[in-house]
Image 1 (spheres, rainbow, N blue to C red):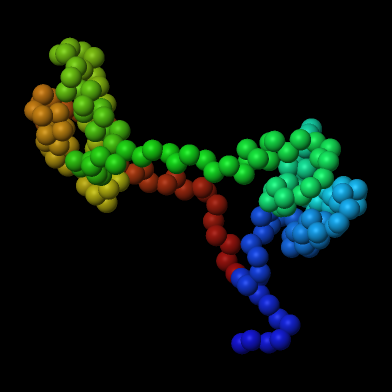
Image 2 (cartoon, one colour):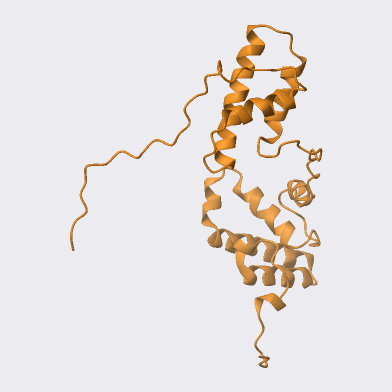
Length: 200
């Protein structure tokens, strides 16, 4: 439906800071077009006063005036020729795009155990024999079993866990299933609260 004089937000320019609303953004656009530098500064001061009425929670910050002028700089796309009362250098930093976080894209052998368990298995493979390695192997096997239960909808196959542990450590860690004591991860039944439902 296309009615004259009716436009939609999807057809309007994107708001840089939506919390201030479209009217404040229009004021900033008007301020940029004023011919006199002193008029632009007076208009900018009035806009920051109105911005504070739109977002009064900014007063809780100690340097809220700096925040207001930074936000004004962002809404003007850095294109407002005035004598800035406070330096907009902080706003320029806010406007910079952050560097993408590098992700580890290497494949996980058994995805349901996750990358951290795979790293534990790598450490186990390189550790010398002893009580410390045995303790870490026991903790790793219990963690693997917990994840298998979550992933396998209640599957509690301890032999499968030990087989996977041996496989992920290239056969360095071999635990006898008859001697392995797993923690009990079965879901505990909910305790009754003692409150009875009221009949309607």
